[in-house]
Image 1 (cartoon, helix red, strand yellow):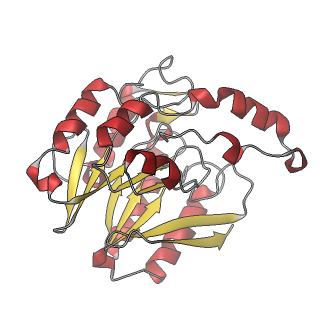
Image 2 (cartoon, helix red, strand yellow; image 1 turned 120 degrees about the vertical axis):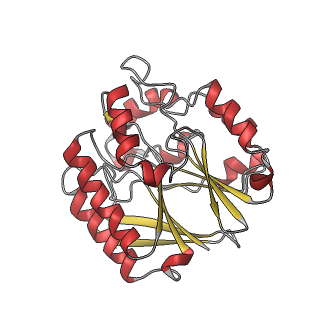
Length: 281
């Protein structure tokens, strides 16, 4: 089975809708396997701000995947619940209701939620905004799972039907520190911007990242996330917790970075091998 990892498409900003449509068309025209053997996971910030028009536009692209036989899953990002300035409970409710079939698929509308992918795999989705709804709590958009969600995750991972499968965990906010890996050198330019980002980076990592990593230690096979648009392979960090593969999708529509390539990853769930495909902006 193949999993296609997308994130941070920010539909509603600039020409990101057109970019997302191009990306979807490329995937549909060049599936890595039979569509019924492929899942699309979007790890949040589907839209740039929480408006009905943006939700409808993002939904139309996700529906194209489903019309061609792909299973589609989605976990929420901070922009899905509001905008760059903060998140709100009403926007969170609207997003969960509008995309409920991609998030919960008929299950109770609560996180964590687990989806069985055949006999061998289980996809578990988290809401890393859950304990951060409100202007002051979400000011730096670090993400916060909260104790209750982590306790529920701990119990979920012990359920027999989950224990019998290899677990893929999807969450929006990143649990690792990037440090020098994304710090520009003198010749790269944009130093004032990156100085600000560097000074505030401590506020941009998931608030309860340590608790999450301890909860999923040696219990999760693949950890997938987005949020900061860097698109790094973080497996060297996750392997400290006996999690073989951890991938940051970056922004699939190449939002707010210095690249001219839109990228998405294809993950073989059986072999843990990955392929990165790219399209010129």
